[in-house]
Image 1: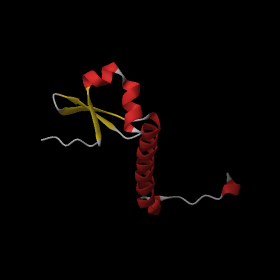
Image 2 (image 1 turned 45 degrees about the vertical axis):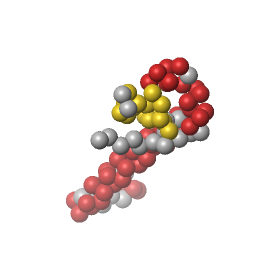
Image 3 (image 1 turned 120 degrees about the horizontal axis):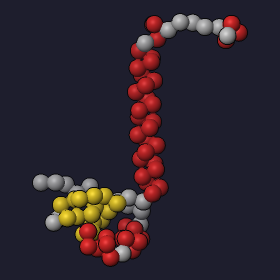
Length: 83
């Protein structure tokens, strides 16, 4: 059984009728869009989506930092004045 990861849900038909009204009713929370009572998609406000993308970028950057930190022993010291 699939879990619905939102407090608010709507059918695809309801979404087609008036998507703006759904966003207003949800008050910024995610909306599970259901197809035959199963989540087909999640509708999130643009601000929430942008925040999620920033968090994913931060996680990716953190993994790059950790990789480079583990390679510190192989680093070559450079004096900025010599460049």
